[in-house]
Structure formats: C-alpha cells, structure tokens
Image 1 (cartoon, rainbow, N blue to C red):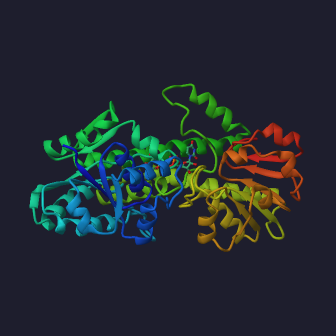
Image 2 (cartoon, helix red, strand yellow):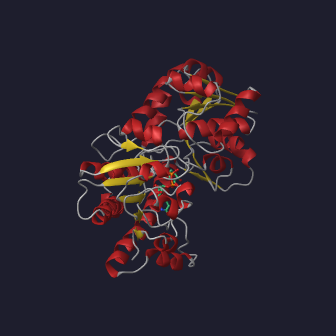
Image 3 (spheres, rainbow, N blue to C red):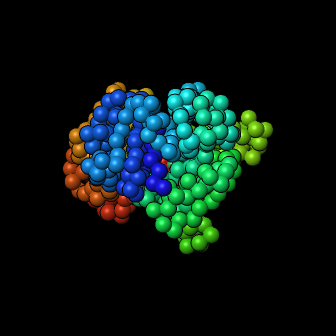
Length: 437
Ligand code: UDX
C-alpha cells in the first residue's frame, strides 16, 4: 500500500522531510500553524535557506503530490502516517526542553482521527516523552489504540538536509508493535539499503540526544586541546591533523575554533543534562556541563584576543566581523557563536560592523543595535581589527591585499582556523588564530 503522509511543523526538519517524501513518490500534506509560511510554501518559496531544497519542494508541488495547509481537520482526514516535526526549543531561563509544541500537535490531531493511523515523532525530545505522548494519543483519539505512536529520530544537518534525508546513514525506529515497524519500513523502503535499528521508545529517543552529545563532546575536546595549545605555544591545527590519522579517532568534528552553536547541539546537551537530573542519573552527564563551558569559553577567548589586538580596550575601536550564521551555508543565527562575539564586543564599547552572505537579514532583526555591511570589504572598512567568525567559502577566498587596502590596521583573528596564515602574514597582516601560536 502507498501510504498518504502528513508532516506537522514546517521548520528545517519538516519542510525537508515533506519535500523529500514527495520526491520518494508519496502523497504528502504538510501543516503549520503559521498561515504566512504555508502560503509561501504553497507558492514554492522556502522560508529558510537550505541548499538544494527549493527544487525538491517545487518538483513536489508541480507533481501534485505535495501540498501545505493550516488545517488539522484536513491532515487528520488525509494521512495514514503523521510525522510530527515541530521544534523543542530550550525553555527560557532553564536547561530543559520546551515540549509544549509537540504536546500541542498531538492534542490538536488526536481528537480528529477517525481511522487507524501511525503518528511518528521525529522531533528531538527528552527521553520518556514518547511514552507519555502514546498514552495521550490513545486517550484523546476517538479510535483509541488504532491510533498508534512511533518514534523515529532525525539526524539531518542544516546545509546537507536533502542529502541527509535521502541518503541517511541509519534509520532508528522506536516502535511498540510489528504493525508500526512494518509501516515505517515500507515508508523508508525507497531509500534502499540503509541500516535500520529497531528499538523501544526510550532507546530511540536517546539515540538522538546521545549522538548530539557525542558530537558536542568531540568539538569541545579539540577546543580544550586548543586552550592547552595556547598555554603551551603549540598548534592545535597540526595536533588535530595528527590525531585524525588514527581511525579510532577520525578527523571529522575535530576542527578547533569558535565552537558549536545552532538550534540543536547547545540546547540538546542542556536538555539532556536536565532530563538526566530528573531521572536521578545526573552524575552520568556532569561532563556535558564541562563540554558546554569549554564551548562558551571559546567565545570569551575570541573577545579577549580581539581586545588584545585592539590595544587593550574597544573604546574608539572599529571591529569588522565576518560571519553571523552559526555555520557556513546556513542563514540560521540561533545560538550563533559569531553573533555572540559581535554582541559582546558591542557591549564592551567596540563599534562593530557585521557581514554575512546570507544570514544578514536574520541578524539585523535579532540585533538591530549592531551595524551591518553590504559586503566583506564594506564591513571591514576602517576596522582596527577584523574577526573571521563563520567559515564561509567567500571569506576563505578573500584577498589579504584587497582587504588590507580598506582597513585602518592589518590585524585579523581567524576564529575558524580556515585562512592561510602564511598568505595573510606575508601581506603584512598581524594574524592570530584560536589554539595556534
Ligand atoms: C547537528 C547534528 O550534526 C545533526 O546530526 C543534528 O540532527 C542536529 O544538530 P547542525 O546543527 O546542522 O546539525 O550543525 P553541524 O554541522 O553538526 O554543526 C554544529 C556546530 O558545530 C556548528 O556551529 C559548527 O560550526 C560547529 N563545528 C562543527 C565545529 O566547531 N567544529 C567541527 O569540527 C564541526
């Protein structure tokens, strides 16, 4: 049977999942409570920046297999399998995740269900959420246990969302029945030979948080080594390269620099600690507190280095900041290390001008107090210090001579260890980087 699929929540995850499932041949109906977003999506317009996604969205719409709506009634009537992809942000002033959107989605959908179906959570949630939602679903749905829950975490990276969805390295199915497993295996069958791990709910939920905790730990590990390198006058780039040849360690996620940000890793490790605390297992995750602290110290170190280059104070100093997105090829500024540094320097009296190839509009909305340039050259004009904080290819390819012609002083801090230090030094720049002499 060809199931009809719905996707509830059209953020990075939901839009990608909906468009890719349509590309796999399914009829898909996406839902969001934001009518504006739905109108844009139905017009083939992406509300986010994600390379390669717009053509997939357009092809889905043109084929007639993909549509978007704001109506839960329509979704309930349409779907055999409902994927829940709403956000689980960090609670204000707390480490824990706010799961109210996901509860809201189930509360809106369940009372409208009038036949057997599968509701599949994809959002990242505290372990134990699925069990609670499964009970809620059965309680609220008129068809009782014929509306069944499953948990199927998503591992996609922004910037590679389409590729990660169509060519996942694994699929995790948290299920309570053979029927649920069978349905999900059929849904993912068009993806071909992908390893599938079938588990209980709690394990499926934990796979996602554990994966993100591991990645965050790996990044903070190399950034901790960068701190030691700074103290010992060693070079973390060479250290990382030498470590990477050991295939037990591997070279990925071993780039030292300004650390991790974005809508996932920072809030997920905090929510993980909070949940472990509730479960009485907080000791197991106290190391994540250190992972978080190392990560945040990189931002502070960057501000210190910039101040040092500025001559000890930011007063009367112009700072050109290259990068606002939390990583290149994204317009996402959630918990962006780059913007964190820019804002801190502004607070300390520096005149900061920021440029980013794509995240500028989002940055402007979130931080109207900062100045923004129209290009990299524009942002660093008259700067006493230049900071490279997001490793866009456009910045990696900057010509040190050309930039040198517009700045007030040739001083740069490479926050992502992505520039050719020799090239910049030989163009007369005072070049500094995190974790390197
Ligand atoms: C991450 C996970 O990779 C993904 O599996 C999960 O589903 C969501 O969270 P994403 O937030 O898109 O994805 O970003 P990712 O590419 O993992 O990068 C996270 C952060 O780590 C970025 O700020 C990046 O700049 C930083 N990073 C990454 C490093 O500082 N060093 C590295 O070596 C790698």
